[in-house]
Amino acid sequence: MSLPSDFLWGFATAAYQVEGATQQDGRGPTIWDTFCSIPGKIADGTDGSVACDSYNRTSEDIALLKRLGSTCYRFSLSWARIIPLGGRNDPVNQAGIDHYVKFVDDLLEAGIVPFITLLHWDVPDELDKRYGGLLNREEFPLDFEHYARVVFKSIPKCKNWITFNEPWCSSILGYSTGFFAPGHTSNRAKSAIGDSSREPWIVGHNLLVAHGRAVKVYRDEFKPADKGQIGITLNGDYTYPWDPEDPRDVEAANRKIEFAISWFADPIYFGKYPDSMRKQLGDRLPEFTPEELALVQGSNDFYGMNHYTADYVKHGDGNPAPEDFLGDLSTHPYSKSGECIGPETQSFWLRPNPEGFRGLLNWLSKRYGYPAIYVTENGTSILGENDLKEPEILNDEFRYQYFHDYVNAMAKAVGEDGCNVRGYMAWSLMDNFEWAEGYETRFGVTYVNYADGQQRKEKYSARKMKEIFDAVIEKK
Ligand code: GCO
Image (cartoon, rainbow, N blue to C red; front, side):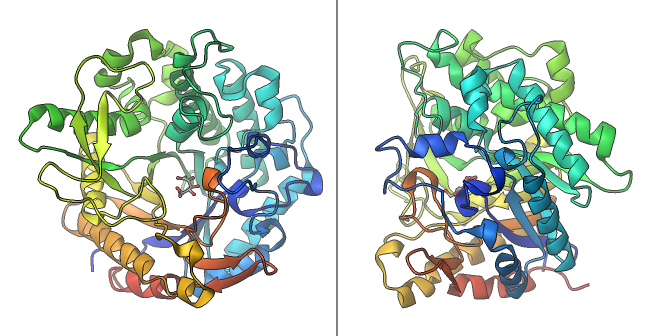
């Protein structure tokens, strides 16, 4: 046993992936509603307008969390339910606030600790139309600060806050590859800001500053003296050198983690972007003004870690192309000696590798001085799961094994390596709208039958989760 007795564990979701009810109670449109309406963007042509209908099934979801034994739950708020047009001079929608206040009350009543993400990608569409959304260095951070203030004021009972989910994805997938909303690609000829190859780096910068603004508001105006914590959630794979004997591959592997994680974490913990990024990107990477830096540096009470997989990385030759956001290298599922990261899943980017989880926990802890870490997402899809019959879907041994192995790897990182992990939220409580993959890829421990009245049924992994944690958490 190696996780402390007050260790929190539970599940995570995000508003656009589970809530549905996109037209209900005055919610405004978001960039994801708009993006889904563009033909070809979502694999099965669907969107989040119904999703799991969680907006109308809050008590059912809470009962499920309770049944599974969860002690915490991470979910995100829909900014456009609270301020439908998004801006600091736009009207606030009381119905949206009331919904989340009640949800938090009900969770606490059920003995479940809420972790709220302020923004999990569903930016109010109006802000994108009005001034370019995340691209706007002046307006966006101020509007986010205002939204955060409205939320902190309305929901004082929540003590755990995450500003942004995975700014890497917002920046790179939203503004370089175009896989995610708003679907910009950095090789477009024209951009509102001139050179489109700058867009992802500007978006990342603006998200950092907006995060810093929200944290300052929380600390100055709302944070209770004895409790209350706020941080950002970053995603990143663990990365092995393709050839461990080749120093160029070793360096490339480290650089890849820096381009994913340190892009955001170095400014927060050290007050600067990583040297590897400055070297490769030059002035395409913005400089912090002194005012921005004062907001960003020191702005994490904890590190929110989303983690799923690992990869092998081989160095590239020559100068990287401007859109090479990985840092002039290529990733492989196999090492030079032919060793594979792990079995295939339904997600092309995900192969289980629990040792990599322990590896990355150690990498982060060493680099950033053993900060408190909450694992805010971890989980897997299963190859072909959606094509199976219901009884087979419910028997998700593969997912159980993934959670078992990853949780035990984390327990070793805590018990044997001294990492300071305080909580863990599995992705996800239930099958849901998997962004550009639509509903064809399932990540839930609970099966959702979308075709038949949104019935939820616990899979094997759901029923085993408590057992997995009971085996590694010390008894009180
Ligand atoms: C994330 C994503 C989740 C995905 C999950 C599986 O934060 O990474 O937001 O919403 O559904 O990662 O791909």
